[in-house]
Amino acid sequence: MPATMTPPAQQTQPPIPVPPRVITTKDLLYLKDALSWELSAFKKFHFFAQQATNPQIKQALDKAGQMHQRHYEKLLTHLQVDNNAAMASLPRPSQQAQQASQ
Image (cartoon, rainbow, N blue to C red; front, side, top):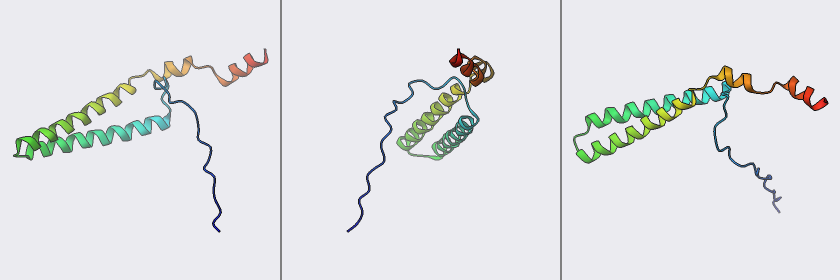
């Protein structure tokens, strides 16, 4: 008889409604990858749209390219953060420990 496994407890943490003010190194690497993918997709769709002779296909390719361009521009807005100022405004771990002991 096969052993039954119980599924792990699901996390009930709500999604974050707004991005954090601080960008970590890992966040930056994810954003760089996503920017690269979006830019590559935009360039490919633009190239294929220029090659298309069927107006409907050309329009569909242009539309897809514009979508990737919008995604690229949206991702760029997440990089327009003064990370040093945001980090300075966060409480330091030593400050939190001092406040807790008071």
